[in-house]
Length: 260
Image 1 (tube, helix red, strand yellow):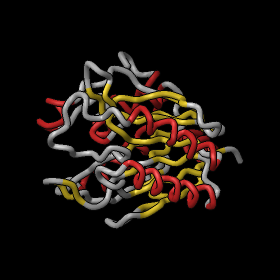
Image 2: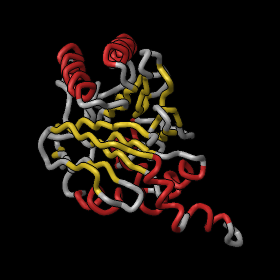
Image 3: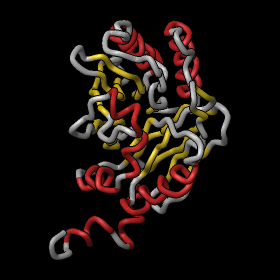
Image 4: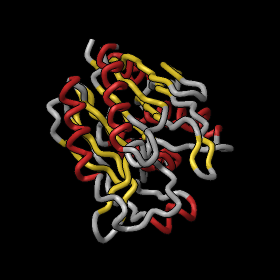
């Protein structure tokens, strides 16, 4: 069977301490590698912290130096790695996910396309395109948190041939229904895998709900977490997608509809 083993980390870094955050990432990567993982996904804003009320342009000069160290962690453990982080591009801030291959080389940067709430909308410039990369035999798309609540964005990845969409997330109370209801439906309606990696714990004014999960093409839960820090791992086999689509294929049938 062709496929990959996916791991998601549900947790947070150490606010204001990039060295400690990277030590934590190294420890998590070692655990994922020991579990046979090919791809490891960290939550939204893991490297920098997510909710930083006083964040302004120029406040993140250290991120550019920290990212190669994340690449070194990927290389040390032979993993493809997706790291949630805020980025300072000089003229604008971005809420992003940076992807590193198992050699440690950067494969691409995805910028959240749908800023959520007044704080994000005032601070972050939205992205304007998707990002797809290869991990083993799978084609993988990237979304961040609120993006997954827009079926059009995930359908576009499926139409582009993605087998898996990974979603670094910072889902807070009282939004538990997003993880429990919407995430499995995104997998089911596109007959793909979805890996939803949420934060755990709290930040100023926010309590994160956890509930990270890996879903299969019927919306089935392949692995899920509660509210505490956890490493989720599941095997994703392309045979499962192909078997599901052989019965009925939404993408194929949609293409045959008038005006679709």
